[in-house]
Length: 104
Image (cartoon, rainbow, N blue to C red; front, side, top):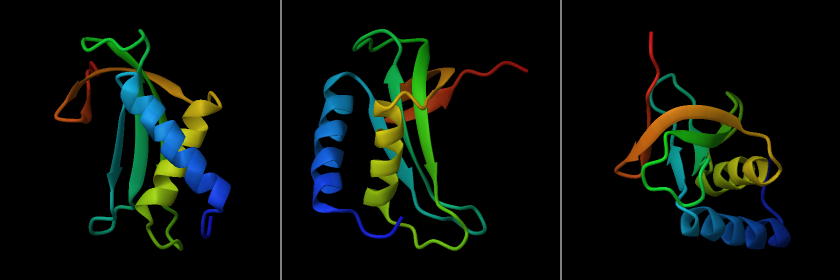
């Protein structure tokens, strides 16, 4: 994705506010070493639950040939969340980051 349209910029702001107002988080990480950058949205499966055990998560990964752009990544991830393109994962939120509660 290249530059966002004016409508995409407006949608991103509205959707991010919705996520945060409903107990979710948005996290981005720029590329580090040989790892690509990413954005993720995590929303508790139970409305606004601070101690939720499962989260609906949507991701956006930066392709090898793309320039990382935090806002574009946030837009893609939150757009996927809003359209139900999510994965349900166990975890909890600490310091605005989703900690996974995966068992071996």
